[in-house]
Structure formats: C-alpha cells, structure tokens
Image (tube, rainbow, N blue to C red; front, side, top):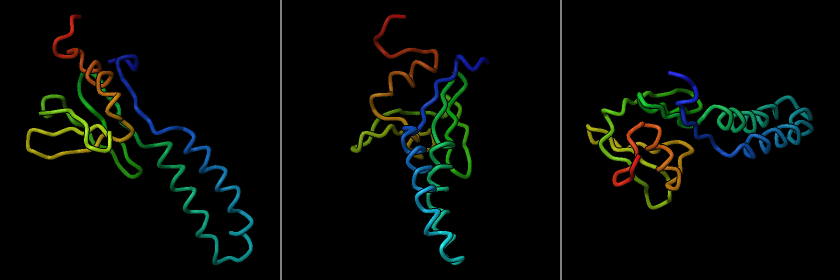
Length: 125
C-alpha cells in the first residue's frame, strides 16, 4: 500500500505555530523562578498534540492518532459514518461504540469515504 493511497487529516498547523510562540513567550516567566518551569509544559503539550494527532484513512481502514496513542480500525468494523451536532465526523463501530475522528469535519466525509476505494452511494465511478 503506497502512501499516495492514504488520506491524512490533521489539526490546523496554526495551532503548532501558536504553541511555539506561547513557549517562547513563557520563557521569561518560567526562568524567573525554578518553580515556574511547569508553565512551559502547557505550550509544549499543545504543540505535541497538534503535531501528532489526526486521522489517516486508506483502503484497509482508519488510524486515529492522539497525543499518547493510536488506534487502528478496519473498514469491516465501521457500521456508520456521520457528523455530530458540532460538525465533527463520528464513526459508529459494529459493537455500537461511537468515536469522534480527530481533525475530520463533516465537510471532509466525502474525501474520507473516497479513501475506502468504494465511492459514495449514488455516485458513478
């Protein structure tokens, strides 16, 4: 499977830039006293989350990535794809579990479905 078959969804990279700016901005405060060093952990965690999290889709399935882990879901386990009231993409698995897909919006669902290689219902391929 080539990486060209994989569709990637990531958070807006402006979040990563903001985390870098916040880290630099927090340096004077954090270095003023040793017990304020924990302040640097907040922009660092946000930056790591923005760099790592997201959803990848290919003909084999979905890979959901978070700050501290990842989960692979085969398309055979997916019972339904849809959107919630906040406009986030949600997947319902065959066992009834519902998962929000990181960085995937409702408007991205056609691109996500196209990654399966099946196409949208009612479309001609």
